[in-house]
Image 1: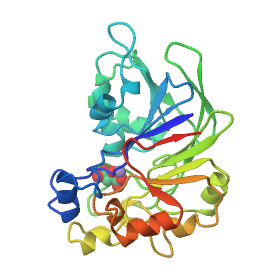
Image 2: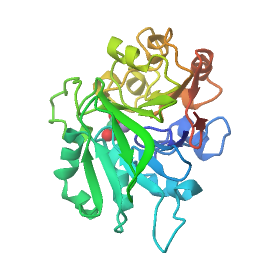
Image 3: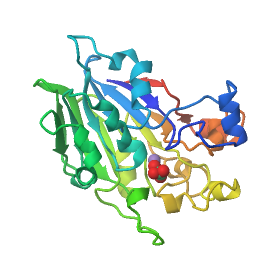
Length: 306
Ligand code: MLT
Ligand code: MN
């Protein structure tokens, strides 16, 4: 299996278009210790020919142009992209689908709830339903991912609930959304029969159930949105905590590094990293702490061969 991070940043990317913060300016200036990152997406292939994209961010068009393995190779029009797997309905997870219009066949895989978000928004009808299949994936039921022209990809997908919340744009004004564990926010387990890894870009809490599930995995790509829960408030750039946004923090006694400390997972990589997170800057103590804990800070183009 080849697994390639197309985009390692959270919604907004790094630098974020309207951020005047020092970290974003270091990224704009080409500082090698502040590498720019596009918004969340992962590409996976079992045969190095057919690819599945996990999370379709608004940067998907640029990501396809950056990574030749996602570009057309046959006929006048074609794509190696067989499917797009959605783990939630946030803007940074679904808006990239709009780049994939132009009557090209592929499939969208998601829970009924996330497909419902697409169904209710007519702009996604640009992906004509007789050409682009919408496949409902029930939680905890392994699905052998099919190829567009028939046959199987060799990859098995299992979606499972993680603590999270509804997308920001579906929150009711003035009412903090409850943390739910259902079809709104899911993790993905991908297996080729020999190796298995996890893609979990959003997660509010690491439960015992989640720890048991990921135990022994070959790789874990996990929510690295914020270093600390009140990071955006302290930086003066927002009023919400990470918990309010449905994200566990990386550091601290209740954070991701601590939560997975005793887990046996071969490779641990943080993804969906917000532009405010100091781990994006390679000369910070927070970046050093991530590395010391056996994790890597995800970067665009980072590849894992399993
Ligand atoms: C999130 O991951 O919290 C969301 O993508 C936030 C957003 O929609 O901006
Ligand atoms: Mn997001």
